[in-house]
Structure formats: C-alpha cells, structure tokens
Length: 315
Image (cartoon, rainbow, N blue to C red):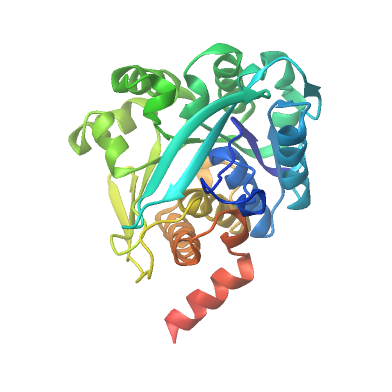
C-alpha cells in the first residue's frame, strides 16, 4: 500500500536576480513538498499532476523522482500552463511572492488521470485549495477527494490561499473549501486562513457539520494546535533563529502525515488525542528545523533528524 497520494499544482522557487544555479530545488506547491516530506520520513508517496514538455517540466519531474516520489501522471504536455512562484526573502525574513505563467501543465490535470486504483492503493489522499480555483485541475481535485472518501482513505486537505490565484476573492476560496469539507478528514489551516473561514468561533460548527479534525499550524514560538472533537490539543513552540523558510509548513504536514502512518493509523477512526499529539510534535519539529535552515526541499528534515531533535529535547 502507498502511504500518501497527493494531487496538485507544481511551483518552483527562485531567488530573483541570482544565477540559474540559485534555483531552490523544490518540486513545488504543498502537494509536492508534502510528498517529499513523507518520503524523507520513511514512508511512501506518489503525486498526480501534469507538467510541460520543456526544461522546466523535466526539472520538476526529475526533482520528484530524485527524492523518491512516484510520479502518477508521467505524460508530458506541450499545450498547457504552469504557475511559477518566484520567491525571495525580504530583509525582515518574510517571503515575497511574484507569480508568473509559462508553458507547462499544472492546471490541466484531468479527472481521467485520477485513477481509482491509485487512490484505493493509498492510505492517505492529500490535496490543497490552490487547485480548487478553476479549470480541469479543480474538477480533478474534487474527484480525488470524493473518491478517497468513498474508498475509505484518510482525506487530508491543506487550505493554502494565494490571492494571485483567487484574484483577491477570499470569499470564493472559502466557499470552495467549504464545498469539499464533507469529503475531508484532516484539515490543515493557518491562523490567517481560520479568519478566512469565519474565525475561530466558526470552527466548532464546521467540524461538527463535516466530521473533520482541524490542525492549525503556526510555526515557531506559537507551536501548533489541533481541534479534535471537543478537545484542543496543543504542542509547544520551538525557538527558531529565522523568521520563515520556503516549504516549512509543508514540512510540518508531510511529517505529520508520515507520523500517523508510522503509528499505524490506517483509517480515520484510529485517531486518538495521543496519536495526534505525537504527530503534531513530529510535524512541529520538522517545520522548525526547516525554518532554521531557510531552504526548501533540501532543508526538509529526515525522520532521523526529527527523532534526534525530540530525543535531545527529552533529555
């Protein structure tokens, strides 16, 4: 059985004004980074997407394969569009995004490429709201989440709002996310995105109506918290030397999902507060190591690094 099957967009981070060698080796987007984080934590992952038949597309496919992620849709496409995210760190450490379009293929992942056998063979199906915005990829994402739910996989979803994708329409993004919540078991969300969904007071009703477990990831000193039934589970923050790092939130979630599988979770009914707490600790350490490294895929820690960190903390 495959541990995690991800569906989504592909991005790449680049430091503006630098040489080509300064590309951060990132498969891109939450689904790609999550898949790589899962593999780095000793579990298996595959990813469904389309990519352009050009240097950029070949680079993305190679990066995923180099890190051990299975490519579920290897067909290269000549007439499509890929979203590129050009990212730099400002002087205060905050990320600065500039988006561009180029020949490629993320938005044209088609429903027909979401195969039932791929989902049936996976314990966890993961996607993000980026691809819910428009086009065939939005339909493919919805199909994957619905199929995962029907076939008994744990369905994971990352609310990752980007104003440039949604044309600053926060309400449209919130509506699209709410539409798929009946199929979702685990919802990853940031503090800002909680506000987008109606604020912290709206979360209990969303959870009750849709039967979801929500994990709010706030890396660094704030730690993280999960809302599980009537319980709020918190893990402490860690001291970090940097403000931000590309892929830190994805490192958190990839390690979180990997930890669930390491702990033997096969279905959503297996979840307990203790299992969630361990997974959150695992994820929070992973994200904080990534923050301190100020990198992308190369800074997503391995299972050994996370366990060494936790062991050091325990002493």
